[in-house]
Amino acid sequence: MLPMRTAINSRILSWAFYDWANSGFATTVMAGFFPLFFKQFFCAGVDPTISTARLGWAGSGASLLVAIIAPFAGAAADSLGMKKRFLLFFTIAGAGATALLAMPGKGQWLPALVLYATALFCFASGNIFYDSLLNSVAPTGQRDFVSSLGFSLGYLGGGLLFALNVAFALWPSVWGITSSASAVRISFISVSLWWVVFSIPLFLKVPEQRIFQHPGTISAALTHLGSTFKKIRSLKKPFMFLLAYWFYMDGVSSVIRMAVDYGLSIGLGSRGLILALLLVQFTGFPATLVMGKLAERAGTRKTIVLTIAVYAGVTIWASGMESSVEFYMLAIVIGMVQGGIQALSRSLFSEMIPQGDEAEFFGFYNITGRFAAVMGPALIGTVTILTGNARLGILALLPLFIAGVALLMFPLPAKKAI
Image 1: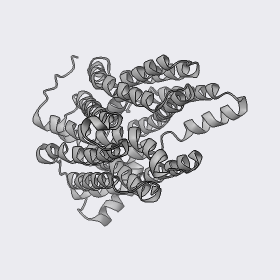
Image 2: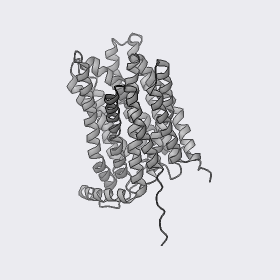
Image 3: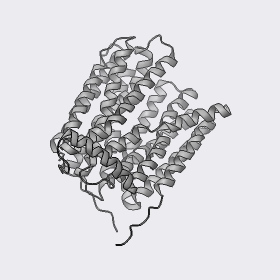
Image 4: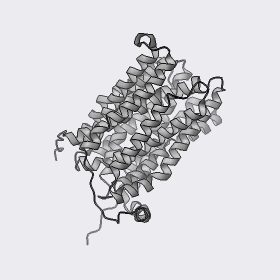
């Protein structure tokens, strides 16, 4: 059977542009400037291990809070028919907290950390409702491409804004900016404006399916949440997928985090790390679209397995990496599959969701994502301590990829004929 041709209409493009909008936060703030600025400016004079711990605690706290509220917020959004309103709230709150990051002065690490954790919490929470709207704009058979289009535009939009902000920070005098620190502050404001402005099309154009299967009250939503726990366990496909997703995304997240550490260990400075991040962004733009088209032809599940295999290869390669050139090559390879594995995982899961429960099911999906990179770092640390070799520690991620593939391809029993 030939894949269905996807027509990119205004609804699809408006939905996908939210990825363009909020990816400015993911690139400029999360991955790029805030970790460096926090250590060098907000925590000036503080022992690096302490500043790293503070940043780690803030990130973990925000992720844990998202994991706690995700199913409840999803249940309320489904029951009340308020996915877009919830998304609007988290968009405004997240963009506002990001803009306020320009306010704390040198050494004021606590207010800066609170604002960052708030923005991170809103960014992750908003994605629950953004993901759940995929079913409103793309019918079955077209979601691989539409989901990939969103991630692809996210890589392009986030990359363009990040590149502009990098230019501000590296050459502030050219732009009439007094210092690199001022340029970073301006970048936080630019992310806030980018996030809000480019999310407007979604709120104007994207419809929200309102299927009131449950009474429209908060108490009814919470009651329904318990039944969804049972529903997920009884529905073998989404349950087995979430289990597989937990394993392989744990490995993926750990590889992404270890790449920066490896870059530092082989002598790359902040400019080298920024270049690597840009390589990931601009490679990810076309590669994610290609992955979406490949999934339409070869099948979503098989294409995800292919991306997992690439990550397993990256893990082996990283364990023996010696030069900065290899680091940049590694960034390009990661950019080729990172968006694909995220986009296709989202679209595959969307096909398994009962109609009317999108936000609630995606709440559980995001819980799984929030707990990713929990086992991986522990395995790396344990193996490193036992062997005294950090490179061998990276190889400890391979079982996560193997387990993810095994669960993803696990044959489900056929339904018995009545």
